[in-house]
Structure formats: structure tokens, C-alpha cells
Image (cartoon, rainbow, N blue to C red):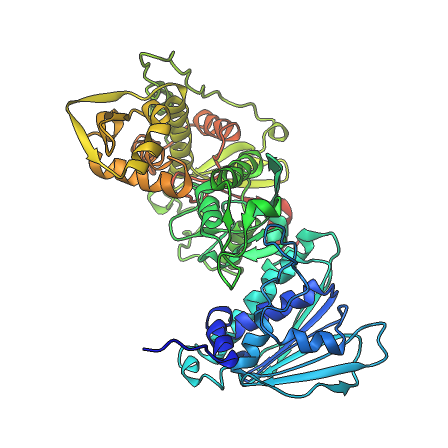
Length: 602
């Protein structure tokens, strides 16, 4: 079979298959070009989900007629010179415009601010039309019609117009968060107009525009650095979560990315604080030397590769956990809103009291509250039994449960006033009230005490009568042995057994019978991908969480006032007490202003 040179049109259509996957991909490339041109106002118009029409107009620096002729040729760009080691713009490959022109009807009109007039050029199915003068304002207008008309097979793989329009909206939202100084307007016959006014340096205001006004009240600021790598942005309190990961936005040197390392780090940072099936809300920006990150992994430029992934992951996890420890225990404002919506005014009770003079004990549906005797002692005992001494650590002192004075102003969670349905503690605060789920709250307290005991010293291990030999590739063995000491601290003792195997001599006692082969292989895979060894620790903490759940104050137990106050005081000094081990909220706060609004007093 003879080898032949492909035509330029076919080459561009092949490139389009990678660069332009759907209308949203074209929108992303065109918006990036506008931002690189210094635009402060970008308007996007669509029809037919972007398949019929996609128009991007900007007030950027514009192009000359000579620039236009080069812009529609492959691998022509103004954004790089001779190296890919110092990329500081969003676009750089020089493939977007010729790729779009090879599969659609493309028209570009542009004018420089200092130019006497504008120019226009068209490309239809890879065929260039002549350059011609055009009356246009300074800036650039790129119009794409009939996307994929030249490759109709690609149209079959597109989703509905509504779905494609939604994907373009998501692209605009990500760009809007990354560039708050730019005004974005998204309009068209297939959508309602969406406008994001420029907010200048107020990034949180722009995030509130995109992610909802509730985000501002539930956001925690992130500002951390490690080895000249900076992480800034905002994350939501754990109880402010969503049903999917669409509200997690990540940026690397201003570039919106959907990197699996970053998304995994965000998920890991919120472990045990967000319920299964729910996702935290975050908008985080990473800044580092362009030489330390490769943005040329894929033509779509949404994936990146870090030179030191362990450093990046550690920075994300550490910064978010520190922020959650600092402020994350506060309840989401949306919890109170949902609670208020559940109240109904004008409720008529089914129970009607008898006529005066006929009251009897049997007539009343309420019974006096009788606390279960000895429960406070069992509360204290649940802490006393948590930290059994080990051979290499002193006993961890248990938290002390102390009654609280009735001075509400001194305590964030207030003073206990009642117990409802033998599970919910109602406490009065200085400016409202708090309702606490006693089981969920104490479960978290017990788990944190257990975690403290786990971190105090080497965990107890069980020695295998016969060492387990695990065959692995030599490079996996090398990586495991680098982390051998850390694994040993968790109770897993391994040693090298020839060039392509490791011997497991001890396993963590807390895990009981364990599949050593599967555990070691899982650790090897994780270390190879992230250069961390967190799965074993996570499994141990899962066991601890399960034990804490079974050892906590159960729903249905009656507590005395001093026991309820002791629980509140312990919550105030325990990290993560705002959520139980499964991520559910442990308390809901209702401000006095909200209560007054329920009764029409404000």
C-alpha cells in the first residue's frame, strides 16, 4: 500500500476531531482567543444549541488583514515562539480556527483600534474565501454556522440542542469565574439571556453570580502556598453541598481545567464531612511556574500534568482541611431556609383539649420528661475506653464532659433548653436557637477521639505466622519501599523479597483478617498514580467511624440538661463536629430574625 500526503483540508478535519468535539468545544476556543486578545467584554450568541450558529464578539486588540489570513492557517499563532515550556496564554496550538473552518462555515471580521478599517475572511468546509474589507468596530467577531456540515457523521454523536446549549453555558460559567474583570453576555434564540457583569477584583462576587448568592454566605476563603505554588479561592462549608460535581471549578494559571488529580484532592479533603452521593462546592485557582505544569497533554487543553503531583495534591488537601477545621463547622445558611420553608402557618392541630374542668392525665398527649439514669456516666465512659495504651505511646487523655453555666453569650452553640423526640437537643444561643442531632453529634465526637488515638503512635499490628509474598513489578516494589516506614506506622510491615516481590509480615490489628495481596496491590497502584499512600489510613478510619457509630449516644436516649450541655461544649472544641462521620449535619441553626419572620414580626 503506497504512502501519500494527506490534503490540508483532511488534515484539518482530523485535527477538528480532537480539538472540536462539540459546539461547546468551539465556544471554549473562541472565548479563549478573545481573552488572550485582552477583551473586557465578550458576547456569545447561539442558535440550535450552537450547531446552527455560534457567534463570539469581543472588544479585544483585533487583527489586521494580514493577521486574518494567517489565523485560519494551521499552526499559526501569536502566543508562543520556539518552546512550550513557558505558556502564559489560554490558546497556543494554532489549531482552533482552521479546525473549525474545515468542518463548518466560518467568518471572521476584525479591526484593530488603530486601524483605518476592518477586514473579513471566510472559510467553508476547508475552502478559504477571499479577504475583503469590512465595516466593523474595533475588536473581533467570529461567526460559526452549520457546525460539522462537512463531516455529517459527527452530527450523529451530538446530543440534543438543549444539552449542547447547556454545555456552552457551562463553558461560559467557568470562564466567567476565572476572569471576573470581564463582562460576559450569553444570548440566542435557544436560551434566555445570561449576563455576568464585571466585578473587578471581587472574585467572590463573581462566584456568587455564577454559583448562586447562597455561596457567598457559605464560602470559606482559601489562601495557601507551598514551595512557590499558590492556591487561592473559596470552598463551601460541608453542609452546603450539591448532587453532582458540576459546582467544582478548578483553574491552573487562569486556565479552567477538569483534572482528575485536583478533583480527587477536593473529594479527599472533604472525606467524612460530605454524605455519600453529595459533592462539595469549590472554586480554586492554582498558580505556579508554567515550566512545572504541562498544558499540552491534550488538544482540548482541559487536562494538565504536574511535574510534582504529590505536592499539588497535598497542597489542595491540606489547605481545604485547614480551612474546614477553622470555619467548616458552621451550619449552612440554606439549612435554616429549608427549615423555614417546612413551617406552615395556620396549622390546625388534630388534638383538641377537653372542656375546662374535665382535664385528666389520660386526656393530655404529653408526658413529663424523665431522663434515663446513669447516661452521663456512660457518655463519659464512651470516651474513657477510646484510647487504649500501646507499647509506643502514652495513654491519650479522654475529652472531659462538663456541665455548662446558663450564660448563653459565652458559647456558640448556646445552652440546652429541651430534648425533642428523645433525639434532638434544642439550645438557645445569643441570637437564635440551635437544634442538634444527639446521635450524629456524639458519633463525631467519639470518632475524633479515636482518630486522635490512632495518630498518637504506631497502630497495633498482628504478626503473620507465614509472611505473605506479593509479586509486583520491580518499579512498584521500589515505590512501596520508599513508603515502608509510613506503612509500618499504620501497622503494615513489609520488606523487600527479591527484585519483583515484597513480603508482608504484619497487618493492622484493627482490620482483622485482611486480603494482604489485594491491599498491597491497591497501595502500589495508588502510589504509582498519586505518590501517596492514603488508602490504608482511610480504611482504618472507616473502621474507626463504624465503631464510633455503634458506640455513640443512640437516638431515643433521654438526656439530662447537664448531659446535653456537656455534648454542646464538646462539639464547640472538636474539629469537624458540624458533620457526622457520614457527612450529614449534626445541627441546624435558626437565627432570631428568621423566627420573627415566621410570625410576621419583621
